[in-house]
Image (cartoon, rainbow, N blue to C red; front, side, top):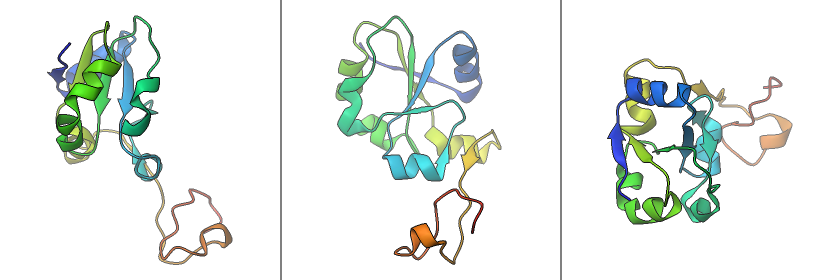
Length: 125
């Protein structure tokens, strides 16, 4: 089954009707910036997508990763209606739509000592 493109506005309507939003980016990308309500299921674990009647909306950063892995996404969503969020999270950012963004700091808290930038999401920084 091929996934149909879906605008952000139409995606919101589909989510209101019970669709599942799946972020196929890596966990660290999802932690830094995500769409509220999105479930993180990176491409290397996409086969673990729950098999139910729920329509699925896949998204990535810009749409390139999703396009390059269309066959794997279609196989994971076999049997349910699948959509792709046009432009990914970049399009939502450009349109000023809601996102959850981690606080970034040039100094490090104790947990993130090995990094140059702290992404730990804690208020201690």
